[in-house]
Image (cartoon, rainbow, N blue to C red; front, side, top):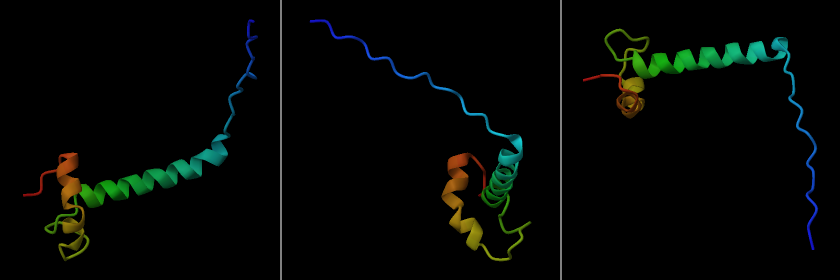
Length: 70
């Protein structure tokens, strides 16, 4: 007995309008820049916050991503 191959329906790509995608892309970009700032720049000397809480919170992430801190 030969099994007949089952044909799967063709996959059609979905078009995403730029008007719907752009606000989410901008929002994601802003969040990424904010995260990079806190991980890479917030160090205490030139910082938004006067305490070292943010630096200590992201300390291991700084080393993992290659940012020097001490």
